[in-house]
Image (tube, rainbow, N blue to C red; front, side, top):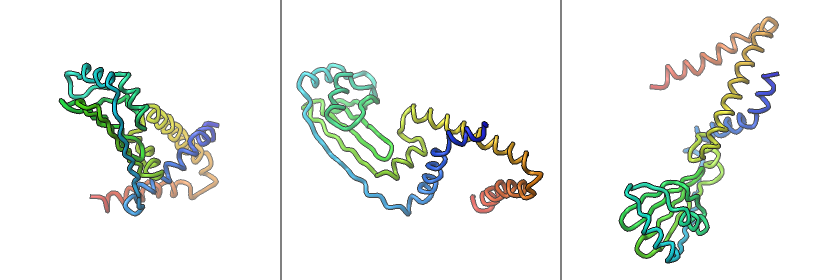
Length: 190
C-alpha cells in the first residue's frame, strides 16, 4: 500500500524531475531566446518623499509597504525582498524561476525603471528542478516530494526482496544499478 501511494503522490514530480534532469544535462545544446521587457514610471511625489524619509542605516532593507505596493502595481515584480539602498538610488532585485527582474528608483527625481527577462518554459522548469528563486512554499513541496520518493524507493526495495526468489535476475540488476554509476564516477570524474 505504501509503495503505490507514494508512487501516486510522486509520479508527476518524478516525470518532471527526469525530464528537467535531461534538459539540465543538455543545457548547452538547447537554444534559448531570452525576452527582455523594459518599463519606466514616475513615482508620485508623496511616495518619493516617504521613500526619502525612510532611507535605512543599512545598505539592504525592504521597501516601505506603500512604496512596495506602488512598485508591484507599476511593474510586473514582487517587491517583498530586500532592496539595495545607496545615496541616490534604490535597487530592487527580483529574481524568479526562468528569468530575472529588477527595479531601480532614482531618489532625486522619482524616476523608476525596470527590466524583466524571461528565458522560457524550459528554463522555468529547470529552475524549479533546482529550487532556484522559487520561494519557501516550493522548497517545502520539494522536501515532501523527496520524502515520497524515498518511501517509494524503500518500499520498492522491500517488494524486490519479497519477489526475488522467483526472479533470479533481481539482485544482479540492483547491483548493476549501483555499480554502473559508481564505476563511471570513479573512472571518468576527476
